[in-house]
Length: 240
Ligand code: UDP
Image 1 (spheres, rainbow, N blue to C red):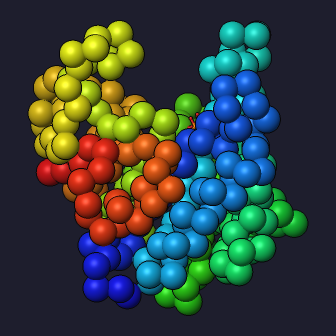
Image 2 (image 1 turned 90 degrees about the vertical axis):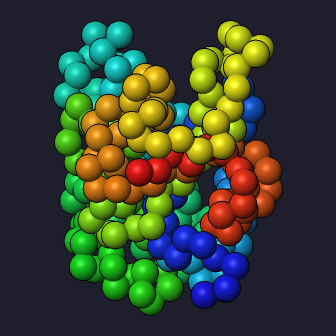
């Protein structure tokens, strides 16, 4: 591993929306996908062990289905399937760049992905493969943030890197309040006390209980993930 690397084993949580090209663009935009995969490739070459947990919100969210009369459980399964589509796109793009990957699904679908098997996932990392976790936790009523917290705990990852479209955590909504201040770092307890929505409460409490730090940052910068891996000041770090 490159000596500048601060976090050797990471869970990279990508929300589905990061794959979209612009506000009303395609749910999976080729050029956007390529940019993200280039960032993954860059840290892979530094020797970082990478687990990707991919969301599905660019395609379907369970709660959006509920609004249209779909049963919550059905909607959530539709959302989990959406993450599989995104995961396949990531796999294909990374492989074409020469990065070896394995996709593991929390819902068995053998023609598309391996089933999630912890020890096998660990072995893939040791062999230098990027592991892409799809289908969330496999259970309705959860999110892919919770999946990231769960997999990070199981895989003993050093950190969850939550890449989104906001550049960190603010004391109030920066879209509504121009005087909002961004935190460079904050403890779990302070984030709780101030009711900051770092992740949903299930995901957050898993990280808290298992002492998994979370870095929330914006993928916009073309070397954002590398900076995060080096421990440079980027986004907001939530820690114990
Ligand atoms: N989902 C689920 N269980 C899980 C993970 C995800 O039911 O363990 C469903 C849920 O309906 C969610 C959708 O999959 O809305 C897409 O995941 P998420 O909203 O976390 O994606 P993101 O916001 O990260 O794109």
